[in-house]
Image (cartoon, rainbow, N blue to C red; front, side, top):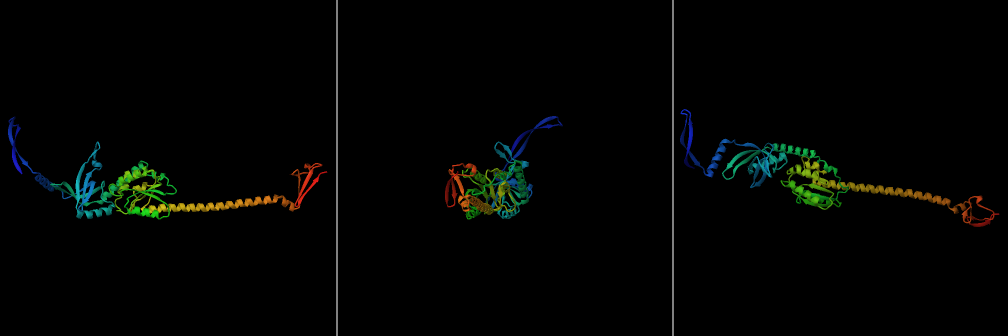
Length: 398
């Protein structure tokens, strides 16, 4: 640390003499090296701060390296929201935070067991942290505890706000206005290609005995990019030329915790207003997601969706069998009715057969090949023919 002095001329007012006096003062200039200044800051912080603080913040980024968890925390709530300046956002506050390996394992396990969620970008958290200052890495927080109940409350608040917004916009029930085809056979599937849930779903439908046509539109189903990825898959399906009957969104085989994207407004709003019926099977075990609420049909798992589709085909097959049986019975009944009518007509024809009349002892009288029905049809000199069972007799009227 180096020292020197600099002279300054100062004018003071002397009230007792009612005049001004000019005199010199000397100020010692102290020069710090950067490391000395950092050490001075660290000492000042250590002397003035509490051992730890409970801090409320939003996760802006999160990564894991060497077993440690590294976060960037920001303040962007209503009390200190980012100020918009053109397209740029000025945060009210931002700071790095670290959760060291020994603490991380315990805190994450506790957090996930209580919330059913992984720590992820956009999540509001309440952590106990020690303020640290390092000459190279600057000011940061060292996380030593976390309150999962704060996050649960914030998630519930955000969920309620999303549902309220969907209801206010009148789109939460729009999927229910769509009609599924009688036979749902052409199905666009949104899932991860490597997910066990997709494999189970495909296998179950393939082995069902029905001809389902499936195409996978791959998407990330968990983590920070899931919402954008699923929306991109929905857009790809809508742009596709194939006449799809329905869209199935399924998830399975991964962690059961990264499900928060299915409660986010943008994804749920897109699904609610989608042009095709959406069937969901995203594996929620605790409660129903908002995506489940807006979907045309919500089921718990990919297997449940497959079973529902197969059962629907079974129902239609049974209905066709019933219609076939009813048609056969109706046809048989109509044949019997027609046959009875034919028999009656045959009896009438038989009754009108001249040969039958002849056998009964009757004869038929004709004049000029016309039946004589009355004596008034005859005149003297007319030639008539009498038809009998075994022949004809001609005679002349006198």
